[in-house]
Length: 168
Picture 1 (cartoon, rainbow, N blue to C red):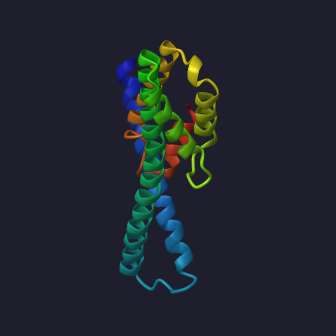
Picture 2 (cartoon, helix red, strand yellow):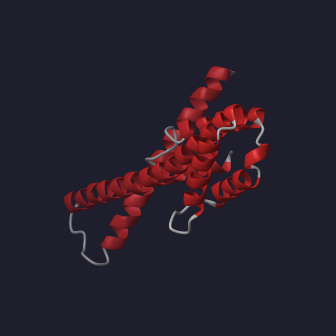
């Protein structure tokens, strides 16, 4: 049963990927025929390949940058969580000052952060002296998991990425 599920899942993902690639490149080729006519099979195949390459480049650039943006936010948040853990252990005022400076820098309007991270930073500011070491360690585990999972995100297919995110 498990092997069948894995085979079916992989087959479905391959089918969706091929559907996206062939569908988008065919659509772009068809739309380009209104601008420049397609007189032969050779020109049609050449355009399909050209649009496939353009689409793949755009996909890799856009989805790669989205992953990097999320990973950058998580990296900063992870660093602040580790500093908070250190502060909980030592209650060192220099560590507290470093945390406050880093959090305030992240909350500055010049830095773009998701609402989730802004709320987390506000929570750290409001509760800096009452942070719970166990809660921080659990949050660190969750952040590290999310950071690692962005390396596994679909970066070659918009359709598969949307389906994966809708299943979370």
